[in-house]
Amino acid sequence: VNWLLALLSIGASTFFLLMYGIQFGNEKSTKWLTSLIISFFSSVLFTQPIKIFVLSILMSAICKSSSVGEDDADEDEEDPHLDYDEEFIPTEKVPLVRKKMLTCKKIDNEMLKKMRDTRKKEKEMNKLLLDIFAYGMFIWIVMVLSYNTRDYNSFLLGKSLRNTFIHEGDKDGIDFTQVKSSDKLWLFIKNGLLAKFWDDKWYNNQTKFGLNGFFSDYNNRILGYATIRQIRIQHNTCRIPKALENITSHCSGFSGIYYEDDQNYCIGWRKKNTYNMNTDKCSLKEYMYTNASSHEGMAFWGNRDWYGGGGYVIDLKKPKDPISDLSEKFDYLQSHQWIDKYTRAVIIEFSSYNAQINLFGVSTLYAEFTPGGGISTSFKFYGIPLLQHQGNSGVFMICCEVLFVLFTVYYTIQQMSAFCKEKKNYFSNAWVYSDIAIILGSYGLIGVYIFRHKRSNHVQPMFRTHPDSFTQMLFRLSIFPLYKHYIGFLSYINHSRFKRDGLNLLRFNPSKMIFSITNRNCFGFLLNCNPNYGLFCVMPFSSKTEGLYFYYVSKIHMCMDKILFILRIFDAIKQLFGLYQLLKTFIKIKSHILYMRTVFTNALKLLSISSYE
Image 1 (cartoon, rainbow, N blue to C red):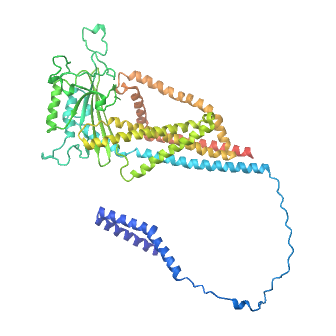
Image 2: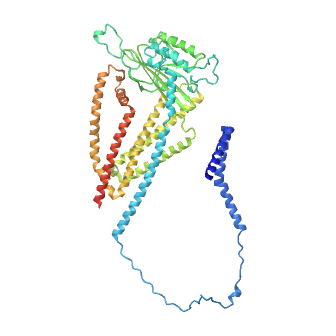
Image 3: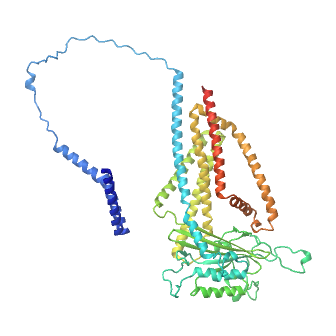
């Protein structure tokens, strides 16, 4: 009952304290809680110990017993008096006992050797345990850095941008996935894209103050302005059969990077000459080629072809009346065939920033034109954290990054000293290559991090000084997958090496040495057997894939690219069996393998123990 009353009183106090905190508001509650915590720790760690120390000094000085000096000189003159249980000490000299000489026994060499071996093993064991502990810390730091690259809000941001701009399932002709002609593409740009960029009017035609530059979702602000970039192909890049030369004289296939057009034209894609070179019709920016360096673009692989970073660019800068003015501009370009038969891709690019989740949105919409006719559309929306070390975990992440660099330098010095000591024998151990791979991967990760940090710092002053200038984020986006690949590579190699260090503990137990000896003897056989087994498993799948690819290459859209076709086959297998069934089957197989491995390991243990008996 007493404990129950105590718990109830504590709960009631906590409840009323919580209610008062809500009544005070967030700011006052935070200040009060902060001051309470600071005062508690200051009292426990500083104030109270000083008080106790000073009080103990004062009490010892005040309550100290005074030592009264007593002079017993008078008592020394009196005769000594013995009690009944006392006697005088004899004054006769006792003869000295002759000491025995200690003889040095002969050292047992076998015992000394055994003690040396034991001490050597203890030192090796301590060194190995310290190495395992340090490497465990290194793996933990790598896992923390890996976790920092993942943000679920990136997926949600991409989904939000997709719902805002793609209009999937819309019946008004602005569904980007249903764009199949150039007229449909112009309709999407005018009615589906511009309205989402500059939705600065309320339902009653009043201006939205404080929301200038925001998308229609009022959460993402555009950075600079969007661009529409066209990639064209040169004329007559393919040969016409002689039997059909009288029918047509023009032929242009897929562009590729080599056959991309990079000439400047007049309106309607008419070539320039000495008479019209300086006229207004030949100086329109939309018909002038912009190279990749000035556009900050980069080559990429689409669904149908390779495309360069340059092209013919339309800048979607905000005019006074963005909807009407840009619509008139698009009508003018459409009437003068800005998109024609030599167009191979139209790419819409823009970037945004969401302050609520501290993520930059990179949006790219592709409309790829097939030489045989038709348009294939695709889109990509990403969220990338350019501004690192924000929030409460910023200092912690900086500490982890510094520790990662220190561990990398430490292991580099360790491996260099081992190489100088062993020289040619250094490469005789197969695990040395994993150490070298870890060191090289760590330095690669540090280099990518520095380059990413430098590019991010280059963007921030530009936003501060020129917030309305165009900013290409695709190049910065390409750095993040490379950073994640390095993190994944280091995580895999580090876990393998950590298991190696755990197995090294077996060498200190003679009965467990049989496992390491068996692994060492079977290493060459397994190394030769695994590739053969892999080929045995891969060859049937590759033959089936080749057959399906050559059969459906001219019948199904997803067969236009072989790598994409293989990925779609894996997706089809996953959908056919279901993810739950695949996981269930995997768990069953894994449990059987684990069971058989346990039985086999125990049998080897029994054999080793019986052999040492």
